[in-house]
Image 1 (tube, rainbow, N blue to C red):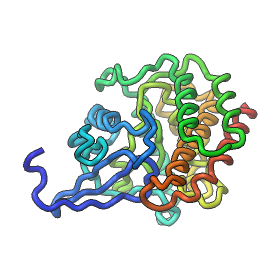
Image 2: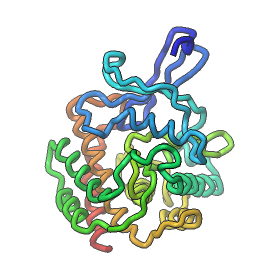
Image 3: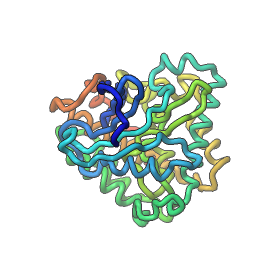
Length: 321
């Protein structure tokens, strides 16, 4: 984009992400955000830059706030990997207890319910209306999801994790049928949105796993981030949210979502258990990269210890269901 940069570029890694690498790049006057895959051991389809870029482009102008996509570069000779550039959106990403403790109780509830309103708005968009009719294959979506994450698990195999194969098998044997179809974010949570000074959500980030499929998978995953890490020591993944930090419960979030959505939420236990499995596989992949020296930044050394407790909660959820 000739003329875009007017000075020498500098870059700074944004700490907090555990998957794709995010940098704030500046020419001294303007700022942009650059996203690229992690270093080494990139699982197939898990770090697709074109997927994120297309979602940002498609959702521009909808009720779902997203950063403006500037450009996509798939020439790996430029940075060593595909990448895209997007607008820098000022605001706060709430990912620590210190940050959320500064909020009043009313602000915590308002922000939580706003998070659900944005998710319901996303799920209400007809994919074809924003050019995403062919973005995914909703038929057999849940079956493929279980197979996909089981495959990702095998690709990151470096140790035995008790119960994880059993959880995979039980999920595959009890997949709900006839679920809804919509745009799925794939990793929706509080620390994947930017909140402005007015406490309004200004942008939803991290669309690397977005697709067209069953939107209830977003709810199941959000609930795990919200309450599933409660009581786990040395947790760098989901901190400062949930009832223990003065936020509403996952059940209250579901009620808020139901007020704005027409989807049937009566069969959420399977989606919750799948959320535990999906996060466990993601963390196992991060653990694999960490022990092979392929991570950038801090906070990775305790990730591996979170996998087994998440698997146990997933199995317990299926048993209760």
